Image (cartoon, rainbow, N blue to C red; front, side, top):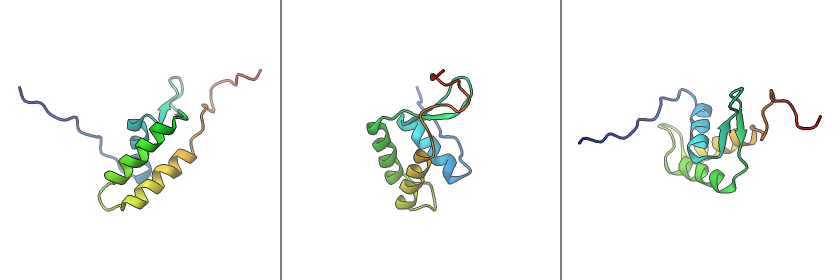
Length: 89
């Protein structure tokens, strides 16, 4: 039986690529209710994302630029969804 590797979706921006890498590494996930990205606060997943960016940057982007974008995106994502009610009532 012929097995095919799942193709990655086409990413149009470097930021979109970085978000995809962070999701693949398990460093971020989406709020199930609202779709906002949330940081999992997993240092091992963060390191996996950086390693992925370093090893396989998108075409035309240096490894350093790819790693910097992954870190920038990660720093811009919080660990809570802005639309979910706060636990501090």
